[in-house]
Image (tube, rainbow, N blue to C red; front, side, top):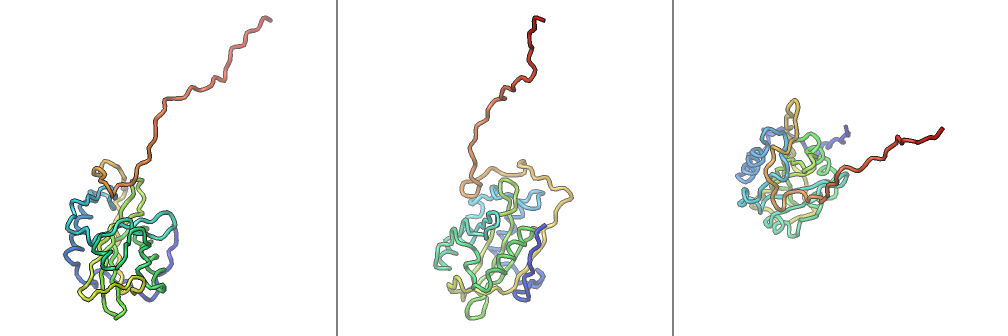
Length: 222
């Protein structure tokens, strides 16, 4: 098991009960994610149907972490891109934060995927007030690896675009209990939808290859 470094004295990881109540959008995204679990601890990304959360797409995002790379925005709502005054697609999530906060943010996301856990964060602007709240929910790839995140970012009324300068306020993580034996079967998954399903790899199936004969009949006249 990989040892994750501590998050340090700041930002503070607080219990969920000490965090503010979810906004309506955050509550709806979490309820949708829970409905996808269907007895599994973490749903598959291909189960996410954009049409079922159409009213939330402008505030929703999907992160993807490939191997040892940092998590990047694979999908980001137009409202979020406009609020941050930049196209977030393909950008590392840590790029929203001040350089001194980026390692903490990356470690926190690693913990969300490794445990796995549900995470919450408050983002602090340059005026030292809360500018946004974030909810992150882990997802599996079609191969079963927990390396995707469905998220929701809710901005406050006084929010301004400070990409690259946000500070991290409070963090909260809620561990997702694992069943005794979690069988990851594709039977629990809905049909993959365009834009959220992993790209398939084409292949052809060949018939059985003829195996060479290692025993030969040798005719002898002796």
